[in-house]
Image 1 (cartoon, rainbow, N blue to C red):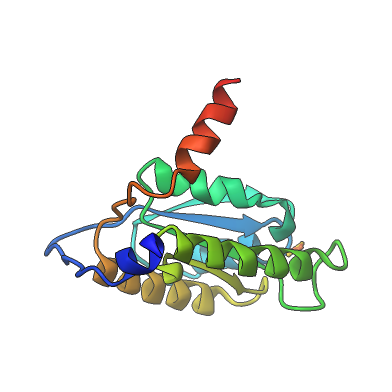
Image 2: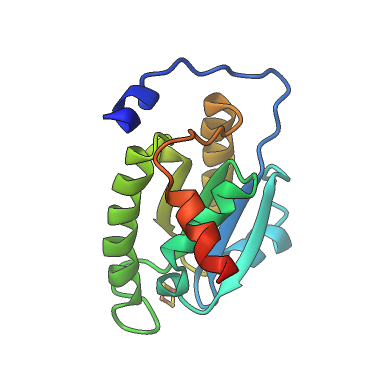
Length: 163
Ligand code: FES
């Protein structure tokens, strides 16, 4: 109930706000796509920081919660296209996991669209730059992420880390 209430709050959009965006790219397709975008000089906003992982299924949902807790305004996970994952079903597993995470994020009172799972192949440099442009634009519209105080999932994770 609290989460629902928080979703209804009015968003303040700061002018000149530059979001911090974290992008997880799988090693085999999307990282190569990002590389191609760079080599081909397709422009995209400098707001992103890329973390290379072997497969999109390597991204633990707690990584995303932790990122939000540490000042990241938006998270993208980019994997291979469906059926192209180099670990057979990795992307499908990631999809199931991230669907659940989206529900949790919504429950926490954070806009679910601050986080996306997408696919880019090694030959899609232009699509990579377009994806980053569009995602950055939508995060700018959301404004700075403010984590609601309730419920205490973030505290739970923090306490677990301390032990
Ligand atoms: S290797 Fe790219 S999503 Fe699994």
